[in-house]
Length: 340
Image (cartoon, rainbow, N blue to C red; front, side):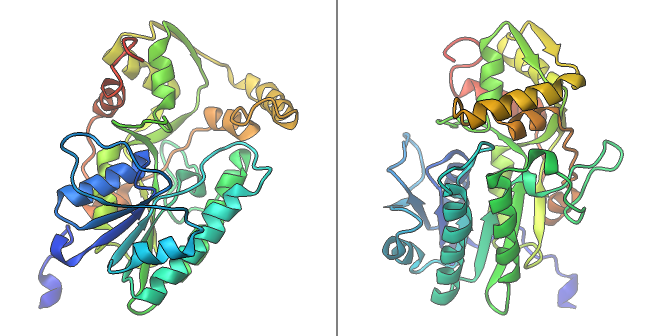
């Protein structure tokens, strides 16, 4: 009979003190604030003190590196859930091996220590690049064989490796779950990270974009999914947290709708992908740039169709219109061509 009683979507804040790694960043910050606003006791592990604003909920900050075992143990003391959103993120080369040190080794250490001290739920924030690309008619789901060799990078490899051992660690009273967000849009991306593209578009009257596309997702939805993943979702499973698929030309038009610019959008023909990728590889080899890489170019031409149905059903997600996510990303820094 108990199986007929629906399980609450949201964890009881009083019962779930949570550690959020990377809580000073864009995605981690949204997750930590969402939890704190809901009443959770939240501890944030950050590399440097974050920028706080009037009205922000109370969060206990611990400044330290993921490789600092003493700080990590202190951060884990007394929490029931861990949301691990800290990561090294780049599609460029990684000559120093930072991707492996942070995304693999530090994640493994955090996972092992969390299990040792009695944490019950470990939520790992991964990336859409660990999921396959499907078609408009048949978008890929979480079980589709990986097929993104064109955008292979140290970042993607390290995240795929971490996913394997994180998912395998679910056993008994220690459960793990993996969330793979799309391109996250929203306010307070200070660096900026995933909102950089829409900001660049909004600064120029004429933009040139490639013809690929990616599913976007609002930062508020990513935060909600992570909170609910503390108590929902199959242990050891992964979920694509994605909203509407947007081609980059369509994304530019939404930016123009919100901010006024760009006035004109030119789309690169597909035959330019190979020469542009070769040029980027030369630039990378000569160490002229870190981010203009072959995988970056390939990603611009890739149509990354992914289904978020499994996560939407599991976590009760209802996505806002894409234009609202774009507006949040731009208005938070001044909007349109003013203040960007």
